[in-house]
Image (cartoon, rainbow, N blue to C red; front, side):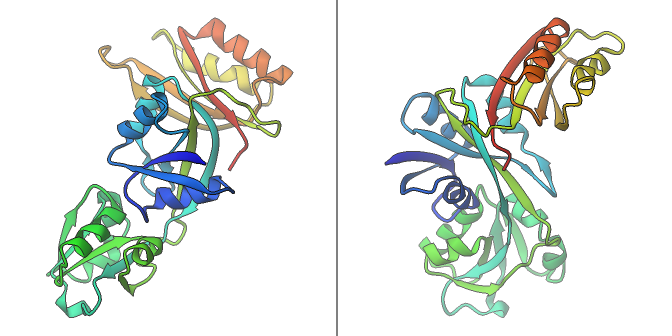
Length: 271
């Protein structure tokens, strides 16, 4: 049985991503932080790791981009999870009893319209959505609620007072599956990479043109600062191509001539 590490506690949205990525029974390994997930996979304490990389409303999760550069792990797959936030309480708690609402900062920010209707209720950031449910359950808080997934309410035997309280229905998070071994499936059609260049005029245009000239679709670009070198950047790219195909090989070889650093992060089927 594969051991799958993810950040958070049982009932987290990451657990739902694990279930979508694996069609077999797995052993869940919930961990406190993203750093712990990367370390567990790198050190062999988990067979795979599943991490969020971007949300359709709040954007990229920069810490995980930095960790992808730091660790020598391989992206093997991805999936997208529809984020449906729910107001969750202990049994017997009524809405008028609530004085505090706990959730991850992104969970709170994605429900601002709902929360703004109740200015008298204090919003308290927590490290995890499902962790908030676990906390108010464990401490038997009868004046508090959590914003989290339906799965977390089921897992901790809690009550959902309000369903779907997020501001925008089209709320998705993209998750990546990480492995220590570099495996490429036959139907892989997406490649992630990171590169850096000299700071000279037009260099980014030249770098991206290696894909445009070969009609390779650029799906995402993200810049992150180079630590210790102010105003220099790493560029993370997702392209719609397998690097083992002829045009993929040629594009990457061309980029190597321009870049001062290049690392392929993974090749996998589009989620």
